[in-house]
Amino acid sequence: MTIIIAVSGCAKLGIGKKEVDVSTTNQAPTQQKFVTETATETETLPDGTVVTTETTVYEDKRGNVTTAVNVRGKNAGEYIGRWDKSEKISVPDTPPTQKTNVVPNSLVIDTAPRVGADKLPRPRSVSPPPPATSKNADTARDIPYMTDREKDMIREINIIRSDPKAYIKQVQAYKTRVKQTTYSDPAYMEDELRAADDLIRELQLTNPMSHLLPHKTLYWTTQEHGVEILANGLPSHVSNDGKYPWDRIIEADPKLEDGNENLIGGYESVKESVLSLLIDSGVPGYGHRKIILNPTWKYVACYEIGDVGETPYYWVQCFAR
Image (cartoon, rainbow, N blue to C red; front, side):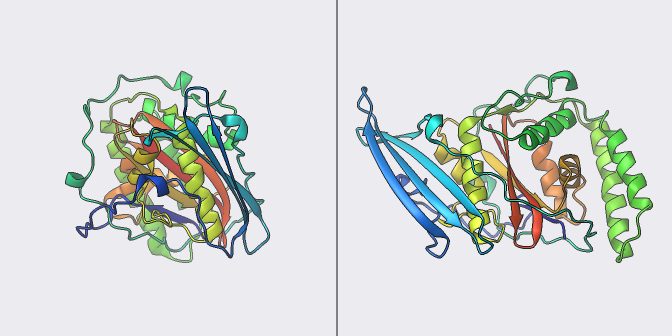
């Protein structure tokens, strides 16, 4: 089964953001039934900055072992965000997955409420950045802490954004594949084709946007949430400490003004995963599509979780400005 989840597009319930003391916001998830080992190391840098490195080892029900590392720095009691000490950060290997040819007949959509726009920090400027071309869309290829598949996903997102009209060919090819496929639920095919036609119209009217750039702190934040999802065995936009994506992103790097995320699983192909989010059939308001095509984003991070429950090839995408 392919499962797609996004915060955007869900009904507003008027729930405000939960306030949590900064000292607890970067803690790794602590469900004891999954945690097999913890360690904390503290050191003081020459400039007086106190750096705390917290390592947590998880083992899920299938025996997959994952390591999460949080690095926090404080100077005279002031929170300064995640300290860049990459030699101490261990990126967990993606758990092995099995190929699946299961065709989904329904979508499972998270109903987490989106905090009202009036409750979120306002950016200093929402002017779209200058356009770019697809020739240099591979902005993350030389980043050492990402896997090749994660870099491929960022490239695919940038190809879409840099030349929306050219990507219509990909959507038309997808429509052809859908028409040639037999579905257990005919309504699913109708929804897919209807959403694909709507996407084609939107891409025709969408101006080129600049490429999104990798951002190390955004990646670590994305990874942390992915590790938590793996440990819980259940995808959710809300972390164990009650934080929404924009909360986690802004608290990890206070220089960022806003953010959001997409979750998707079930497709072995990176391109199909991105295309499914972009078509977004069955999702009111096409929330995933709006996140990907938001012209104000500047940064992107993609983290491949692996198997979550019975769904393979699970991903977290995070966007920020």
